[in-house]
Length: 222
Image 1 (cartoon, rainbow, N blue to C red):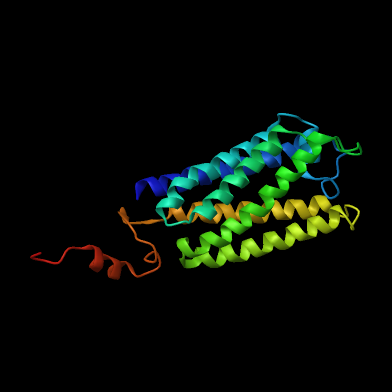
Image 2 (tube, rainbow, N blue to C red; image 1 turned 60 degrees about the horizontal axis):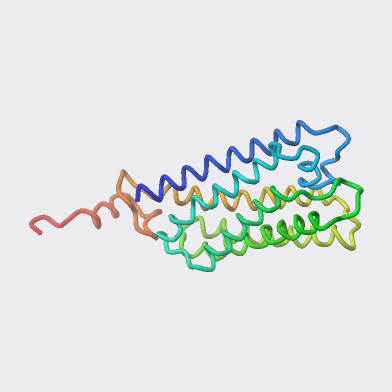
């Protein structure tokens, strides 16, 4: 359906823009900040309201764009709720800053932390649930990226507590890369759901075009 395809394309554009903004945000900060030992939030707090916060808001908006298309694709209510939780967590983390590196955590910093935790956990679970309705090659990618994201989230938890923040920045950035890739797979799958200008039902995306044409063309004399 045109609406589904357009939603996927619009979301892909938002994901790409968010990625570019995040990279720019890392290039603009002080050289004293170490990306291997400091989180993205530590970078963002040095430039409140800057491009990293904007990137998080854009990524949240790109997710919201996908929700109507995913409902049309057969996604369940739980998957949609988890995607809303991911978007809300991103927005909350963008609006409420963490503390400056080295300072004790205050209420805002704790709110920022747990909003991020909700977002990081909600998206991979949603991706796993979306594997079945989206089907095809996307299903394997979504399940693989979901499991990778949960594993990396566990690594982050270990680093944040018993690991004394060892390489926490590296772990978080790889986790973010996996989760953004998961979201991009969802958007790209929806964007590709047309064959020759004809809306393609689920499960037909990878069938031969001639076979699809026979089934969507009315029988002569009907």
